[in-house]
Image (cartoon, rainbow over all chains, first blue to last red; front, side):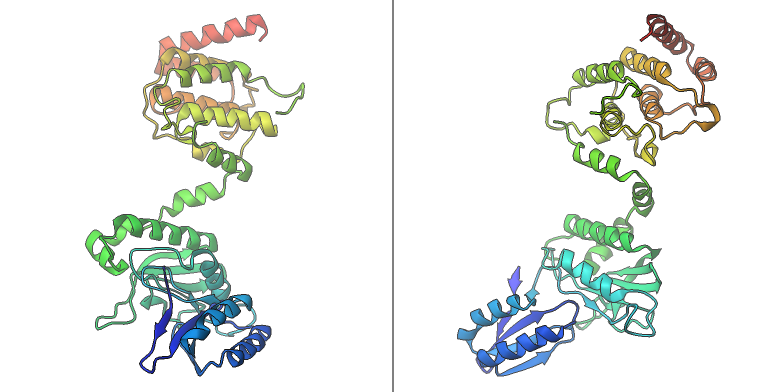
Amino acid sequence: MGTAIFKQKNALYALIAVSDCGLISVEQLDGLNRLVQAANVKGLKMTTRQTLILLAEEDEIANLTTGLERIGFKIGTFSNTVRNVKACSGNDDLCPRAVGDALGLGIAIQEKYYGQQVPHDFKIATAGCSRGCTDPLCADFGVMCKNSGSFDIYIGGKGSGRKPLHGQMLAAGVSYDQVFFSLEFVLNRYQELASGKERLHNTIDRVGIDKFIPPLESHEAAAAVDEDFLNMLNSEGASK
Amino acid sequence: MINDDNMLNFNDIKNILKDICSSCPLEGSGECVKSKCLSGFSTIVVEFYQSKGKLNIPGAETMIPRDDFKVYDRDLIASSIGETCKLCRQCRDNHSDDCVISLVRNSMETAFWGDIIPYPGNILQYLQMVREKDPELADYIMTTYRRKAAAGA
């Protein structure tokens, strides 16, 4: 996993700070203000992926990294990792157009998968309605709320480069839990099937999207099984 | 393990399951996965009952590893089916496929035939259905069942 600290043309270093899908609390903003002043940060820039770039001298990077983590930011990653999740402000409290909790979902996904190693870039976006403000069809794994508790999933999108691509629908109207089950399944299949450092859409082109379709029926059946029993079955799966 | 006089005694079935596992080449090889094996699954089901006291495990019937195609000792499997008949509470219309006894029986039927006999909720009707499918097995089960019943086990 690469840490997203990049030398710039003007010899300053760009350090990428990641929050919960772009949310920054008042306390974090206050801490950030004090931190950037103490570290003599030359400037900040908001990014298309809802992160914040801090421009500083090389010898301030270590202090900034520690300080950012202390006030609840993560440091950005690049290359073959699951990146920070891009989520719109769709939830019960914010965007009036949202039909589901895209923000909560995005934060939960980021919490679980951020930084996980994958064959190539893996970008995730969640959107609270079909307007898709976070471009879920341009993500490796995009989720669009259909209505409360129901989501459509698209995979294999790519928003940048000379040949941007829209993702293909993987599953329609799935539950919150099934979004996680599907993401886990897609990540595992991607690890198994990718040829070298291949981006997900290239793997899909080569092996077909069918290989990525999660067995949602068996997951649903498992969800209906007595939880204690399921735990015992899983924990005693292997012989002692 | 729960110690309660009302708990059903699965010890004989557990001993048979242990014998089935002992004769399996995967036992102790490091490749044995109990949850993916009909005998292992049955053992887990019985142990779950003995530790939690739940005779009905919602959804457990869907977890029977029906794609376990190992070849089992038919005498041991037949004995285990006979033991389930001895334990059956004969719930008739209230029969549940998620009952621990039914889960073991269905697992053993799958090991024996590759599929199950839909349980009618009582032993006599069940034995009649077994007889239509396999008269020899029906006789064997009946013998086991009568022997156990006579011994009051």
